[in-house]
Length: 375
Image (cartoon, rainbow, N blue to C red):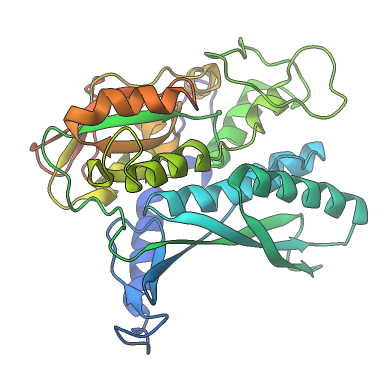
């Protein structure tokens, strides 16, 4: 690919539209659960698809499963795995938050071509730190040594959460005029790395080169590799672990549910984890309402670098990456200011970024080239 040729996610081998079609085909081929309504384990329909829900007496259990993706290829290249356990747990527990579930436990799956006790010790420490940040139990896991099947380390996992019956956050109660609150990301998180790796190759930079941009972004901390000295490297920026939003989001949900928070439970209308698909994730939350981003989050410098070096257009950037916003909460308009103030006491940088509209099921943006009508 010529250096001036615009890059996109599909050109690196990941077609989001084709992926969505494949997932739809998979789901349509699945048979219904043999467990019927009223039985423990019976499925509970829930819009959005951020987590699977099952009955459990007066409670509901939520499950989410995900992996780290091709971000691991950069970690494997650098032999720096200190953040990958955090990435893996984050991708799962953050999805659970979007249905109003409090994460409880996690199990991991690690596949390697060859067992290495030193690497597994690093992964174990990373998972332990992730569980501390998520306030969950690491309930077990599995390591498979698969020479000939996997060529380098891969990691995935499953998280379990719960909420009381009748307290799911579904998006069904959304109204025109509800306010969108953005929560800042810690960076790229764990999506879009096929494109990131292609841009890195085009740039000619090595992962241990100094970052070619100012890494300080509104107080965001880039977690340094152990024993690092000197300037922050591009590898450290790209591998900065995914932010885990259990604190403050679960604290917000529980305090509002208990009547001691900045709003009532009913004022928390919907939550979206901004992962693969970027802003189009908002379309998962309602069948007919729209989402207008009028004051987007400040963009961390690594995204601007990717956009410039890769000649990636704005719409593609907002379709592939979180662009500085890892989660969105839709809330009642009359409680939005109080909720933002409450959130900022725990996580600086939270802000009102837009509004729910009656423009039809679409996402619009202050940048007129950024708009989405399907996930």
